[in-house]
Amino acid sequence: MHNGLVVVSYALADVPVGAGGFCCIPGTHTSLYPEPPSWFGRLDHPLIEHVPLHAGDVVVFTEALAHGTMPWTLHSHERRAVLLTYAPGYMQWSQAPQVAADRTRLSARQQAILAPAGMWERPPIA
Image (cartoon, rainbow, N blue to C red; front, side, top):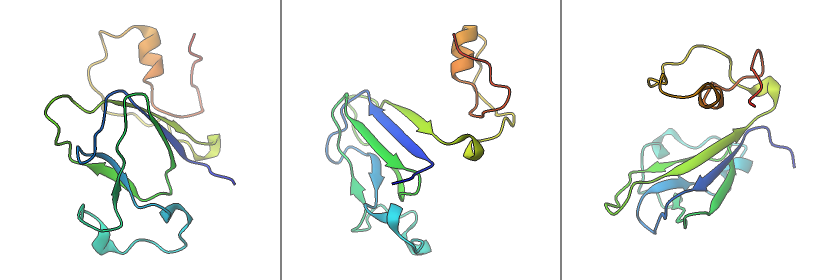
């Protein structure tokens, strides 16, 4: 198997059944046909599956998978996850400026870790 755009989502908090969060249409990553436009924006479609998780669980998926996020409905805690994205250099995002939150209170190392993705002129993180 060859895949260029892979996402690893690491759950930092529990995501019980029906709480919201990651959802997808299983198998769409191998489809040769795009999803009908009428499917977008519908969370009640019978093919959409919510993925419940325990803190520490990991979901690995390709960007080719039809996926999204259901509204968070749990009031006991916020949804928290770390998402790591992997892509070959020729497919990575450019170094175009991004509008970001104020990062002046972050250390130089923290700012380097949060720098936009890209393979050109990226300083090493020590």
